[in-house]
Image 1 (tube, rainbow, N blue to C red):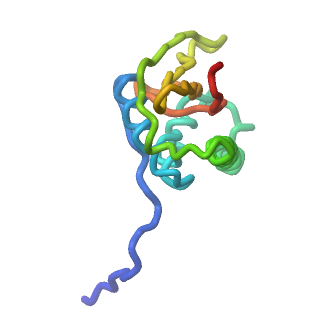
Image 2: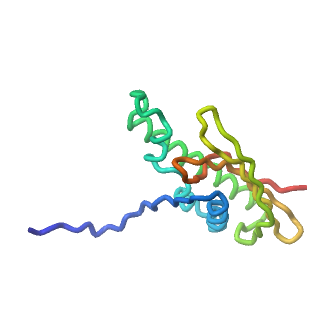
Length: 155
């Protein structure tokens, strides 16, 4: 029996799975420096991780709504990352020149006992200091990037 082989390479990048938050933060910071919006999609949770957080008996959360939720998460994170790149370009800053000085973690839980953390990177380039913030979420004992990615210059 002859089996056809697909000659096209798979363009979808698999999601990174991180057990600890510092590991996620180090990898995410290194990928931010590439200034490519497609590289950060690997840090958002896949659909099976999102599905596990919802009530499995809830008929309303079917596969199509879950797909829309996943796509919205990816779209919003890419949009926020493009804003970050635009702010950096206004200040004539290349992200690859940033040096991470300190990382702050503010842990919390929502009403469904899902764990999240507000992460803040304090970075500098020469004498200028910058702050990069985002929310990390924990789903099925793995950490992912959630939302609220922002970039500001500190006075």
